[in-house]
Image 1 (cartoon, rainbow, N blue to C red):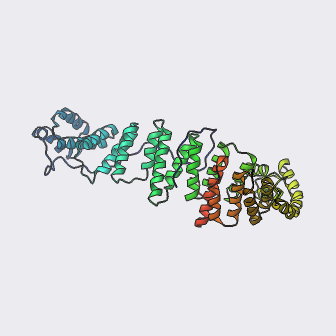
Image 2 (spheres, rainbow, N blue to C red):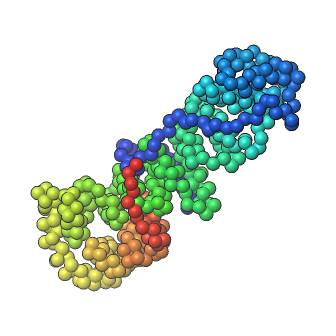
Image 3 (tube, rainbow, N blue to C red):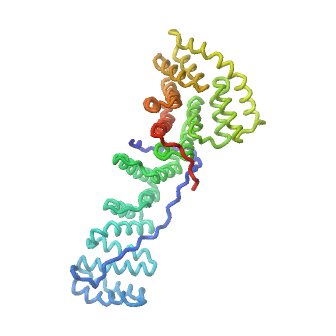
Length: 430
């Protein structure tokens, strides 16, 4: 599944439950550098051996005076003539920098070794990565990115690498570049037949959400719930759609149905938004069920006027609508009936969880002119999910476009999850 291209759609920020740790300074990994004295295969210049040899010998004595040795090393820098001279000199600067806790000196020595071309091939990935870490800590983010990507290309592995590289983009105000980097990682992993990294998806989702890049947050959020479903990720992915997209009540209803389906209803607003979108005049059975659920969960109050009215009206209206279903179905199936009647009748059946009947009427509506195609397809897919026909549901959701596309994508991810037998799990807050 390829991730969609990035945009910069903006909207008001929202809180995201799945927080990701920020990137601060990192301690660069230690390494064993080749000693200057081991000259078997090295080509040091005579001048360098004469001037630098005593410094190298003093480095191996007990309790060296590193500050003094650094001064001496600086004084003989002009003796560097060969690539091996540069490698040995850089190694010494790196070691002194480590002992003196001087990251700038460490970086200078590391870069000298890399530039010498004499770093052993087996050590080159690690050396490049350390150089990248040191550059990152010194806020030289472009070089940091280049060095770390070079290290990864050479086979170096570090679980922090993708986050550090992405951070180099955000630290240079190129958030879109960072998200594109994450997207490329996701695409590469999928093409290789692997599940995308949860850490990559979570980090990318957080960055996109924090920067109001709703399309990107939606794309990564959908992938999170597809591959790593839990109630926190579901709530976050649905929140992006809910807070950043202008939805009609009809569209919002199908989004709230998914929030309930995945068990991510968490507060009074979730329930009141659902109740309001469903409307007891149209879908009394569903309103009654959702309202009672919110009350039983302790998230709604019986003395709330909105809640008490919704429950009272839904309870009184539901039996009458249920009695009328057979007549509504007959009228909707008449050859003279239009698409809107078939669609509305399908809604009435779906409202009572009579999903097979609902699906039949949505399919009928889709054959008639003037049908609200995207609404009929979305609800047909929902009915198919509820019937356990996940493959058909996925095929249906894939046909949805327009303003409902984001809703359908999330339902499609849920259908895919159910088809694979992946149960939604409860996340532990970090």
